[in-house]
Image 1 (cartoon, rainbow, N blue to C red):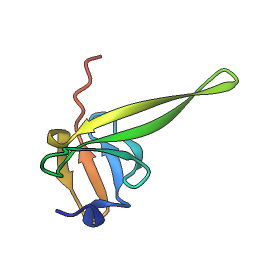
Image 2 (cartoon, rainbow, N blue to C red; image 1 turned 180 degrees about the vertical axis):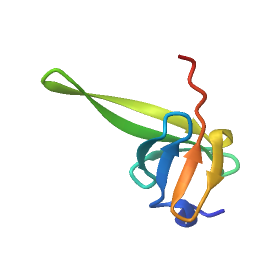
Image 3 (cartoon, helix red, strand yellow; image 1 turned 90 degrees about the vertical axis):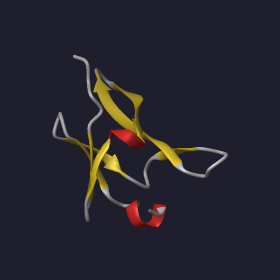
Image 4 (cartoon, rainbow, N blue to C red; image 1 turned 180 degrees about the horizontal axis):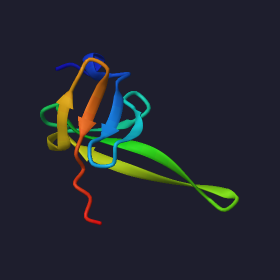
Length: 80
């Protein structure tokens, strides 16, 4: 699968039912030897008081459950 085939798809968290972002607004972790995508780093913004706190969610390739026509379903496996 090529990056152009999965870019601009919404990334949806299966367990929380949340939209995490759109692929294309994320950073990629690429294996230098094989050139394969290992993970997506998705920036998320949370509001705390009067300021924003930015954090990042890392989604590894094996956490992707389904790549559809419009979205990518992931299962991060939260331990809450």
